[in-house]
Length: 330
Ligand SMILES: NC(=O)c1ccc[n+]([C@@H]2O[C@H](COP(=O)([O-])OP(=O)(O)OC[C@H]3O[C@@H](n4cnc5c(N)ncnc54)[C@H](O)[C@@H]3O)[C@@H](O)[C@H]2O)c1
Ligand SMILES: O=P(O)(O)OC[C@H](O)CO
Image 1 (spheres, protein in one colour):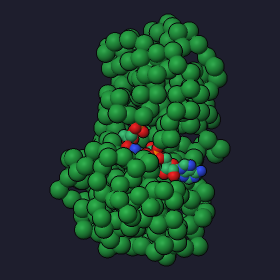
Image 2 (tube, helix red, strand yellow):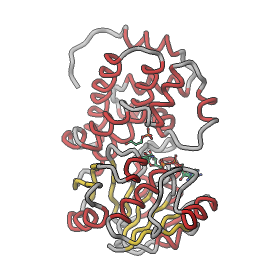
Image 3 (cartoon, helix red, strand yellow):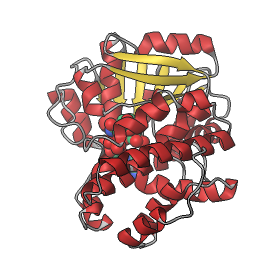
Image 4 (cartoon, helix red, strand yellow):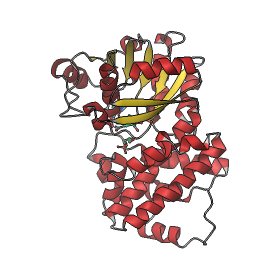
């Protein structure tokens, strides 16, 4: 696996291109924005999505999907709600047997599908993998130590991917639980918005710890219903990512929540950002999915009510805290 294609040159696609380049691979990075193609190729910087971080000059950017798809492995790094369309656009360019690694975190609003379900529906027999974990893009791009889960059914292909992408500062752990590797990464973005609200409203560290813990119970309930293994949810892609994203204002989701907690409106906050805050979409998607599957997820539901249904923040917090007392079970 010498040639790696990366679809999507936001912060995360660019950081993963750096990880692959550090591992000695030839990397082609596909960007939608011509200014990103120009900046990566000529100035070795993604000035739009990852400004101020020098990129390996060997990374080649292109606007062409088929050029990037001409690879031994393909990383799919679009925002979650655009992943299906990217798969559709790529379908005719993919060589049979080339693994497609899903790096987006989210649940599709239209269908309630996990990313692997959306990609599988569009790509048929193409082997799919999931890469997820506690990973701020800027830290990976800078070469700070990071560990992730890489889930794939075929262990031989998995081993090849570990070698192709892993290195001294980027350590992938192999799993065969694709569902488990996606549930934590999707739901933690919703919970990070809740933790941001707690931060912005000065509700204290106790409340944040309670949110993380009871949020993990929601992840565990949904994961069990979708067929995830409990140990995956306790790993890097579950507890690991939940802890990271709920503890740092580096997180776009947590910082968005903090702004809401301070009284700003969602439209206002989104209006001044170019980057994606997946939790805004996943809140809606996961609330519907949980209702469909009969899974109790009051924290995610509360975030959805605030973001997407105009609920009053203080009323929602009060409603959560005054629910009937219960046993501490998952
Ligand atoms: N940034 C991180 O630290 C990080 C880490 C791990 C996972 N992720 C996940 O990676 C995915 C991509 O996030 P990011 O941080 O690279 O994005 P970003 O916020 O840095 O950039 C936005 C991306 O969305 C793309 N985009 C905008 N409109 C689009 C459209 N209509 N169709 C297709 N693409 C469109 C842009 O081209 C750009 O690549 C998300 O699911 C995110 O949760 C991000
Ligand atoms: O900045 P966020 O909130 O999108 O989080 C980025 C990564 O998913 C953290 O693992």
